[in-house]
Length: 187
Image (cartoon, rainbow, N blue to C red; front, side, top):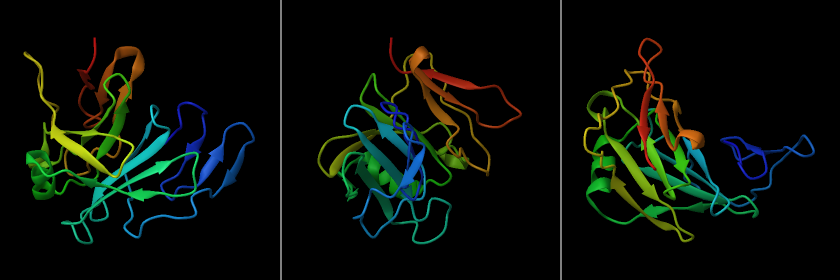
């Protein structure tokens, strides 16, 4: 993912490529044991990276295990996250989404997470970030006349679900054989 304020690039192993100096570093020296493989997204309001998956994100390991992490980009430590109990969290546990896509919506200060495989088609999770280590999760509510996103097939979304600031919404490439799907999230 990219730090949109500096242009720095971060890998899933939390290595950082400094855009100004074109050098790589390992600034995160302390991290929780449970790891997040993908997806990750950058929270420009708080200057932090957020990652979320079930199991290993690919349908293996303990799929009941939700791994979530926040990484302040100006620090050396990553923090494990939990979510407040609720309907969305229970659905997330039941669904155990894999091969998901996620991005940050700066206009609404939230992350949208989409897997779209099989029964998960059309269900978008909204994660509300904070500065602490317990966040809120809810299900996305579609506006009047909106059509939920389509199924992505067995290969998953694989981060083909991105926020477009110019259009104030998310675009999804569900499959290479179908048109792009767009959902406006702000006026």
